[in-house]
Length: 210
Image 1: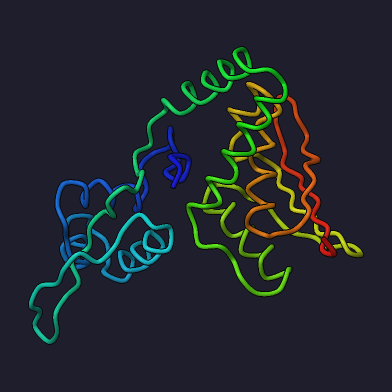
Image 2: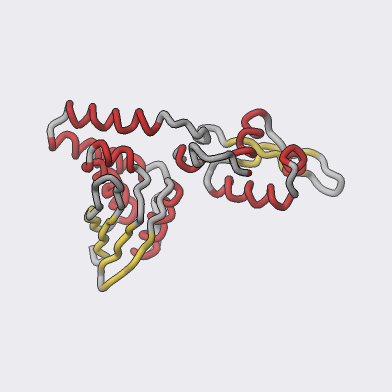
C-alpha cells in the first residue's frame, strides 16, 4: 500500500481520521462514530473500503447488546502514513541507481523490482482478460487511475497520470518496473508506451495472443 492512497497534502477526510484513531487504539464502529461525530453507517462504509485496500482488519470483538461487535485495527505492515518523504527519497534513489549502474544493469534492476512488486500479491488466474483486469485492479490499489480499452487482439492500459510519477520524472526508464509487473501478473506480452515529461502518463499495450 502506497502513501499516495492517503492524499498527502489534503485536509484529512473520514478515512484518514479513522486511521489516526485506529493507530492510537483498536476500536469498534460505534466508538469510531462517536469520536468522529458521524453515523455508524458512514464509518462502516469507510471501514469496508479500508479493508479492501488492506489497511484495516478485524482484530477482535467485544460483547454487544444483541451480538458481539467487531474490533478493528490497522493491519500490521500496512503503510498508512501520508509522509511526503516518498516524493523526495524515491526520485533521489532512482537518480543514484541511474548514476551508478550502466544501461543494462539499470534495466535489470527495474525489471526485478517489477517482478517483486507482482510477487507481493496472489498471482491472478483465469482467462487472459480476467488476468488483465486483476492486474488493472492492482494498479488502482497503487493509486493509478488507469483504464482498459481493447482493439483487435491488443489491450491498452492507460491513464491520465502515473502512480510512480516522481520516479519517472527522475528517470523515464522507471516505467520498466511497471511493464515487468504487468508481464508477471498477466503472463502476457506487455510493451511500455508511456508518455514521459512534466506530466507522465501510463500506457501499456498487452498482446492478448501472447
